Every structure is written in structure tokens, then in C-alpha cells.
Amino acid sequence: MEYLDRFYPSFALRALSAYLDVAPGDVHVVLGKGVKIGEQWVPTDRHMRTRISFSGPAGSFKAFSAHHVLGGKIPPSTFRGKLVLVGPTIAIAGAVTNETPVDPAMTRMEITVNVIQNMLSQSFLTVPRWAPAVELSVILLVGVFVVLALPWLGTKWSGIAAGTILASYLGFVVIAYASKGYVLTVVHPTLMLVLGFTFIAAKRALLAERVAGVDSGASETNRMLGLTFQGQGMLELAFDKFKACPVDDGMKDLLYSLGQDFERKRMPTKALSVYQHIATKDKSYKDIEQRMKRMSAAAASETGGKQSSSGSLLSSSTDVKPTLGRYEIVKELGRGAMGIVYLGKDPKIHRSVAIKTMRLDEVDADELPDVKMRFFREAESAGKLSHPNIVTIFDAGEEQDLAYIAMEVLDGVDLKDLCKKKNLLPVKRTMEIVTKISEALDYAHSQNVVHRDIKPANIMVMPDGTVKVTDFGSAKITTSAKTQTGIVLGTPSYMSPEQLSGTKVDGRSDLFSLGVVLFEMLTGERPFQGESVATLMYVIANQPHPSPYELRPDLPKTVGAVIDRALQKDAAKRYQRGLEMAQDLRAVMQSLTS
Image (tube, rainbow, N blue to C red):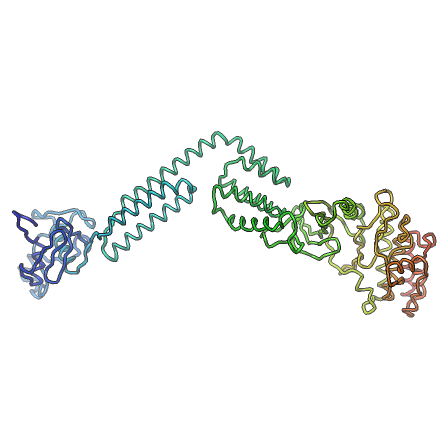
């Protein structure tokens, strides 16, 4: 302390120098920096003051009653080798107290004890030289954040960001205080951050309330219209309506769902536009960054709106299941001459369906109408039939570059493998299968539908033994003029003579083809063969079929009569109805069991 241009040690400093046996001449003062007492250094501020690091509240240091000491109740050895201060330790006898951070009324004697303890243990609270620069940097950082970042972040994320900055700085201050005794200011940056966030949040709330008051009616109308259009599959109209609504949290969810619907419909460019619209307000919403990257790649490779490079609707460019019409595509079942067959699911009634597809973008423009007519003929012809041995058609449609037919899932095998010599079925089982096909064809013919492509590949046998006639893509509705005479449709090896000649066909043509199938199922060979299509057509039209007994002598004699009648060149001499052929086949089965 300075007095009349001289400096005097405080009571704490004098007591410590006496305890350390340091002469006054060995106490050196560096004005504005600190005091050196022997080997001990006590840092100070420019007013030669030091901050006190309190060991605890009043009573943290051991105290003895002077009365007990003077009365001999306390042995002298208790104080040997220790620094002992004598003075009032309680608020009596005129003892002056001071309010401290650890106790509201601490005597000056106990404060002095804490100061001496700090100097002995060299545990000081100091303001490092770099503290002003750090505090100024934090204030500037907070100012930049409040001015530039807070207005662009939503209320939720701005609160998280402000809390993170505040917690980080407070953590740094606490660690510096606990480990080094450094004292840093936290009031100014904390106050600036809290006030800035409060101001921005209040301003945003007022603006939102004002906008909501003006546009709430129109926004709700557009939102409801958008949901209606989306529910009806009119996704582009839905997006137009959603764009007229403010992008709040609820609208983000609706737009995200719409973007996924565009993905399901294989429209990545549209999906990308939806996600970009969300990003104008919230770039970190859910996983739109990843989705935008995938949709950009899909649009750039021109797979959007079409199938993937493998020809399949299932693509790695999206994690949502694609849809076709109202059906959700589950997996690929197989591939045919006209396209891919998928396993689909009707989400409304949870029914699994087989979806046959045909790519329209690969068909020449001048042939497209005719190709589409033949493709949808299967749905038109089989769709009007309801028979346990005919495949059930549920739906048909066209979407972008694809035509599709949804039908029942057939979990069976066709007759191709069962027509090989090593896999031939017993005669009775063969008769049962062909009988069911005859009855199914009789029903179809009664509904004026001629299949025109009966062959083993178009006949399925289910695990429970049920037989299904499939693929009515070449069928003809006899009451319609849609299929002209002179057009040959079908598989040559199984065609009737009238099919090959291009003349008008009826149900008896299917029975001829069924006779060929019966012959092949019994013998393992087709009745008509040729080295070329022209030769094969000549044989079918002009040469008699071989006897099945030449290939399989053990066949019942009654079987030959059925084959002979079914394979007559003259349709008038053939079976006129499928029921007639079924009756003869049942008679053959009865003779086998008798």
C-alpha cells in the first residue's frame, strides 16, 4: 500500500514474510505486476491488488478460542511450526465483516487467512494478458452470428446454434478458471447472444403472425386442393398448389411425401424440384440432400420416367418402392418376350397381383397402335371371363412409357417341362389336365372368345393341381371386327390349318391346338415337325399326324380316337365344342380305372 510516496506491506504480506523468515529487504516490488517474497511470486494488477481464491465459507480454517489458549486448555504444541493469526473471527467486539462470493458475512481476519493461503499455495485468480483479445473475438463472433446467421435459420435451429455457442464459451471459461485460475468476462457476449436471439425470434414470430393472418385462408385452400390432387394421382397439379403455401414444418412433410410419390412414379426431375423447393427454406430437412443427389443423377442419366438400364422398374436410384397405376411393385418375377412380369401389391385391399408390362418407348411409332391393341386384348378378352381354369384379370392401364396388365399370381409351372420324354405325366393325370383345359376353352368360346395360342407355355399347373389357361394376348373376340382375317397370330407348331391359311377361325381352332398339346404330353414329341416354318406349315395343312402308338405303344386305344378327332384338318370333322372333347377324355379316364 502507498502512503506519502512510500510503499508498505499489507498485514497478510508482512505475516507471510515473517512466517517464511524473509527480511524486508528481500521483499521486492514490481509496480503494476507483483511482489516477490524470497522465492514466492505474488501477481497483482496495476493497483497492486490480487484476486482472492476463497477456500470456502467462514469457518473453513481451524480457529481456537483465545480464552482456552490463555487458560492452558490448548497445548502449545498445537501451534508449533504453524502461522497463527490472532484476531476476531466472529461478528462481535466490533469485528468488521465483508460480503464475499462464498459467505455474506466473512470477517476481515478470515479474508486475510485466505489471502495468505493463496500466496503460500501459489493459487491465484488472474486475468491473462490474452483475455481482452479473446473476449473481443467472442463478441465479434457473436455479433456476426446474430446479424448474418440467425435471420436465415429457423427458430429451432437458431436456438440450437445459439445454445451451442454459449455453452462452448462458458465451458471454455469454466475450464480456464478451474485449471489455471484464469478469469474471463462472460457477461457481454452472453448478453449480446441472448438479446440477439430474442430479437430475431420475436421479429420472426410477428412476421409469421402477420403473414398467417393475411394468407391463412388462401393457404389452407391451396393445401386442401393439393392433398386432393395428390390423392387422385395428379401430382403436378398438387405441387402447383403446394408451392402457393408457406413452407412451414407441416408443409415440409407434405412436400416430402409428394417428392416420394414422384419417385414412385419414376419422375426424378419432378421429385428433384420438390426437394429443391423444401431446401429453399430448410436445406437440412430430413435426407433431402441425399435425395437431391440421387434424383439429379437419375435425371442426368435419363432413366427417369423410364425403366432402369436393366429394363426393370426397380432401380437403385431411389429407396422408395415404385408404383404402376395403383399397384406397388415388390419384386421382379420373370421376363417374357413382350416385357417384364412383376409381383405387385394393391395397397387398398392388400392383394398380391402379377403385373405384366410392355415398354412402349421401344415400339416404332407407326406400329404402336397395333401393338397396344394386341397387348390390351388379353385384358379385354380374359377380363370378361370368370372360370376357375382361366387366369383372372384384375386391371389394365398405361402409364408414361409402360402398358400393364394386373392379374392373379400363378405360383405354378407351365406344361413345357412336362412335355419332355423324361418328365411325362401318367396318362390319367394328363387326361385330367387336358379335360380341365377343354372345359375352360368351352366356357371361353361360349363367351365369344377364341384363345388362338394354346400351347404348353400358356397352360399353368398349380401346386394344388389347379390348371390355368393364361396369355390371351392373341385372343379374338368373335363378335368384334377388331381382328381382321388374313392376320396370322400364334405359335406355328400348335396352329390349326385355318390359322395358317389366314382364314376366319373359331373355337374349333383352339381344340386343334389342344390336340397337339395332348399328343405332346403323351409322347414327348410334337405331331407336326419341319426343318423350316414353311415346311412346318405345309405339314400341318396337308399331311396326316403320326400315330401316337408308334411313339408310345402302351397308350390306351381310346386315346388315339380323341387325338385323331381333335387333329382333323377339316374343322367340320373336329370336335365342335370343348365339352365334347372333355366328355371323351372322361370316358378314357373311366376305362383306365375299370
